[in-house]
Amino acid sequence: MIKYLIPLILVIFIGCEKSDNQKPTYFGGKIINPKSDFVILSDSYEFKDTIPLNKNNTFLGTYTNIKEGLYVFYHGNEHQYVFLQPTDSTLIRLNTWDFDESLVFSGSNAERNNLLIDAFLQYEQEEKSIARYFHLPQKDFTNKMDSLKQIKNAILTKYEENDVNPSEKFSKLLNIALNYPIYTNLEKYAIKNATKKEPETLANSYFSYRNKTNVCNDSLMFFGPYYRFVIEKIYSDVYQKNSIKKLDNFTVELLNSINKNIDSEEVKNRLLYNAVVGHFFKEPNYEKKNETFFTFFKLNTNNEQKKTIQRLINDLKLLNKGEQLPSFDLISADGGLVDIKNVAKGKNTVVLFKNYKYASDDWVSSRFNHLIKNNPDVNFVLVNLCDTSRRYTKNIDIKYQYTLPEESPTCEYSSSKFSRLVLVDKNGIIQNGYTSLSSSNINQEINNLQNFK
Image 1 (cartoon, one colour):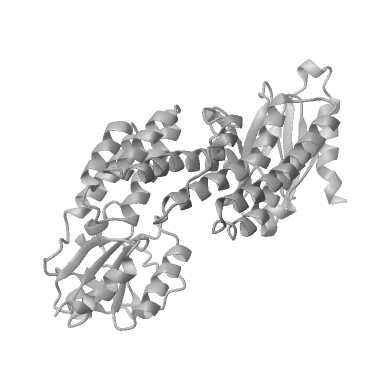
Image 2: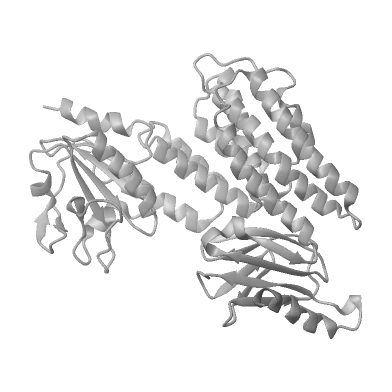
């Protein structure tokens, strides 16, 4: 009975309307096992509405003058997409315990929206198989992708032949949802090939699929299949250039490519920021990082992002290689006050400064525990930074964890809020003042600590 409640509500609302021109657009539904008391509907640019859940966990948004196109709805930490047209009455039903798999649309445009969610679920399944194909020779890999394209195009053709009220916008969206993940994997294959010691020469026709794509639609950068393709293409272009002639600074070339290919200032700033942060933490000791930071400041116009990068640069000036690890107090799990010098005395030590708001426990614990397992003779210390609740990191043995006294100046070692690893030898000398859990050679660096006498 409950499942028919929302359609009944909509019938009551819609029945009051006098003509199609006066009809509003409705977006509503029911959330089973809700994670919050609201749903957000947005086009990621101009339109955003927060819709409260009722006592029975249903919701209903009413809109006038809504534009035809793709929207995103959020609930808790999850999101999905919905295609809306003016005067639509579109409903969703989902269980947060199985967000994507349980999502079902009904009402206006139900068939179209169910096609979109089906395309997403198929993509998730196919990615598991495609990951095993990247080692194949070029011809074998492209044959696999061609076979997949035939399946996707058959779905697209069937939809277009049976659609009684064609929508050019939706056809383009469905094409992106179905085919752009294939194009993304072709770009990934090209990147992996370009990074080999002896890359295979790609066929002249390898990138021919690009003729069917459009990477200049910034209004779709919030749509996963489109976003992932644009990013991989930008990266791929730089990798292909680097494979022909070694670039002086790969990240600078990447930043300039983002600046050239993305028009939206907001999207461009986000991509520039993500690129400079991501590449820094993969190779934090890169000798040309100052050139990278300079290029970022020149191209990025977001003041908050610039401030964060400036704080990162300031952090790099503290705890330098060759210096003694300074003394500072820690609070152990039993509440006792200990000096870091005593914790690290006579031991090769890895100190992780971590702010829980800027690094997920799951990611940190998987990397940190991996390093502990691979380096059993090294002393590991996790400093949970500057939170009055003395919050510890989940899934890491408490014996490794410490918090800080209130107003501890040690917080300044990571003013940017990014997680920071400091490597200290058994003599208390800093051998690397700033590295990261995602550094490409972090295991080797930690292992090398035992080489210092």
